[in-house]
Structure formats: structure tokens, C-alpha cells
Length: 159
Image 1 (tube, one colour):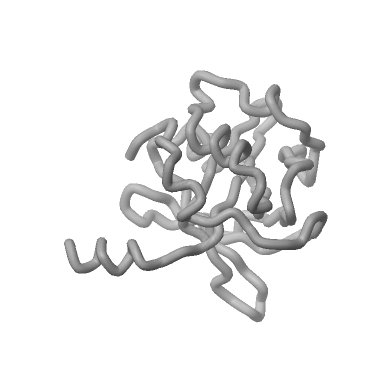
Image 2 (cartoon, helix red, strand yellow):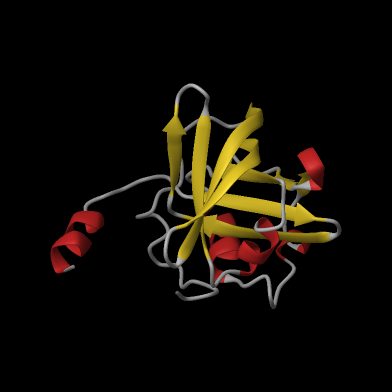
């Protein structure tokens, strides 16, 4: 596995905040494993740690919102990646609006899309959520926050 760890260390990719809601319960977390996985039909998969509070909410949700963060918003990555929803109401600390199915949309995102959960798959310590895009918005195009930009964040729920 040392060779694989060395390979992964060479990668740099965007990070995302994924939000979910079921009834009055809201959750959100920083996600590093995600990407487009189909052109026709358009589909995107996000992988959420089973140790994360957001996992329990996302597992019951019909829609998730995937936020691309602007390079300057390390604070959002720190909040959603370094704090646990078991202990902190993250949404009390940031401006947001209700999106499809009441899922929080962070107003500080560079872009976001809401996706209907098409399928869930077990990937080991993460679950993959295959999403069919419903609504997409770009508000502040530019350089996204990346995995290297957030390497200083200690996970709120270490794996």
C-alpha cells in the first residue's frame, strides 16, 4: 500500500461540501472523493465517510447538494471538515438558503448542484451516492479549493 499512498499523494483535486436534509434535520461535510462518472445520462458520485454525521442523514435523503468552494473559502472547508455535526450546528454559522427538498445551499459556494440520489453503493469505509443532477448554479467562477489547500484540517470524525 505504500506505493498506492505515494500515488495518491501526487493527486490534487477539488474538495466539496455536501449537504443533506431529512425533515428538520440538516447535515453537511467536506468531501474529497467525488467526481463526474457519466456523460449520458449526466451523473456524479460523492463518497461520504460512514463515520461522519452527514452519512446518517444522507443515507435517508432523496436529494443531496454538492458545493464547489472558491479558493478563498478555507473557512467553509474548516467548518464542514473540521467540526462534527454531532456537536455543532454548522448551519448556524454560515449563510444558506433552502434548496430542492429543503437541502441547505451555502451562499458562499462558487458553484453548486442539487442531485437526486439514484443509487447508494458500499465502498468500504465510505458510501458512494450516485446523483442525477436536478439544478445547477455557478455564482463565483474561478479557482476551486483543492485537496492540498485543506491538508491542514483535522477531520471532525477521523476515519
